[in-house]
Length: 377
Image 1 (cartoon, rainbow, N blue to C red):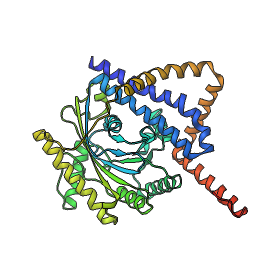
Image 2: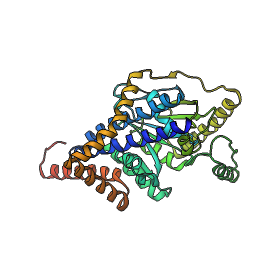
Image 3: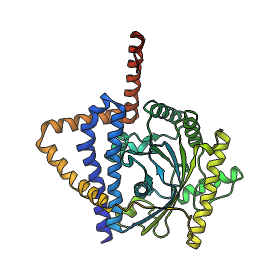
Image 4: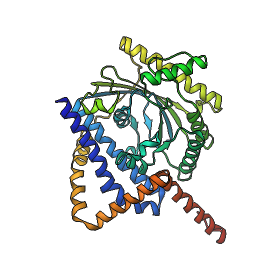
């Protein structure tokens, strides 16, 4: 039965992603040519609503109790989220965390972007959708990644975009091999060795935080601690075999910009202190069962999850039918996919194309304003 549930989970999860791409995101493309801000608003609603689906699947299929506590993520703000990366499957459980922890007006339009390894964008379906949702992909080459961050920061500033950005400062999940690498780093730099987290890589975080703060585009940093008290789903195979944890514990601590450090060295120390605290927190939790205390963050609108479950389960079949019977729709999807694949292999993905569209539009507006004195934006 566990294997059947695991296979069913992957089928529903993957088919919903492809259906969203085909039926919702492909027809949305012309909006980008009209307005980046409108395109981002609509696509964020679509992606956030899809996040309700894995939340429903995790709860309905496996009875996984994801307990979230601490400070709610506020809509209408731009926040940087930092979280320990325990397993390769963390993001499957982080989407339910977002469902329960994001509060405020316009919750559905408040999107959280992930910073991911570049190779993920090539995965058919998930990689495509996350490009269209403007996730960031990095190559672990700082000269290249800094350029990616710089373009992104400029873009969100131009369109005054409020959202959350998730970064895994450890750079990878916790395994025996990555722990050995982390321990070698600790010994080399006279730092303590950790058992439950890896030493964070500070360069990307420090650059993002400093640049967002200096451009007045960061309202808060959230420190997120995640722990699995029973089953630890190390890889996707665990989920495929239906080996889901019965419980996941997550705690969020908000640090508003008014108390955040502003220098590179202080931001580095800030992050390192958070990871030192995580090690102690997870150690105590696994030893005694005592976790961090705070306000319980729980969204109990079950009807939302049932509605999302029905919508995303049926959508793949609607998409297949429409693709078969409507030639114009079929041509649209094929054209969009070929264009996306060309961007993916010849460039760095659709998310960069989106940013270039805005840059081009700004240049055209600036040129028109120079030739037409007194013309406002």
